[in-house]
Length: 394
Image (cartoon, rainbow, N blue to C red):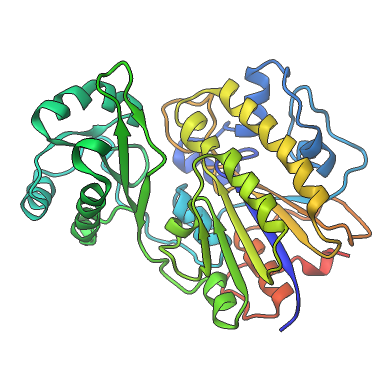
């Protein structure tokens, strides 16, 4: 088994522009990265990402493209149907999604589903509509403290979320209820991509705060991923952030929970100091959850600045033969209508101190090109979709 370390960092939702498929989703014109900096009038700087070539993939006001940059760069188009976190991550790792997950954005969950969940869990539920998680807690949290009804809600994504006061119910009970909800929603007609526990604390709408004890209950990937193959032959697969949830623990050898994207990057830097052999797979969710869905370009830009500063530290820690890949899983343009993800191309930056060249590579027709390239480096079975770009990386 050869010695190799690859760091794959997903900046959750950092799309770099619409493509032909975006029309189907009403997202023609979306461009998460470009519109963030346009909306903030180019006042923020991301010099490290700029030096790697990110700003050569789309216009980034205040951060012009470079004639010379340090990484191999390209844009990738999504093959799967959808624009979900799971869809994007699964495709990165070699699984094509052809049947979209069920959403309940417009109608809320059917009463039949709510009744079954109440019967099995012993709890009553309030809410049951698409909402911002922070807003629905403000609206219904005080009622919950009086009645002990759990808050159930959804969003533009394929999710069922349960918000419950951490001190009133206890984490074990919140998680138990979400596990039951996951079982209930295994039926095809209710098959959501994720059930999410959303614990919060506080004693009034003025100070309710969600805690870091979120937990996602996802579906198993619908096919074998490169993570499964890496683990099977003895490589380390270290997950940081919600990667472990997205893949429902499959193919993971070590999982680190993150309370924020900043902590996730600090954990990645710490892992860089460890002697491991395999893949460190990182998801930085705050870009999507805190800023994209809440349509906050200023917050998104500031989060990118914080990432850029920590990226500088990570680059210094990398060993000579380490490979760093930076990408996304979909878009979430904070200047776009609604609060949904946006169907966009994703960036792919590939860097190593040993590379003798750096340039723009051909655009890829699948996110799975990432997984195929990783599989090539580790000499494991190539996934059924995707094309390896290893031949370009010299």
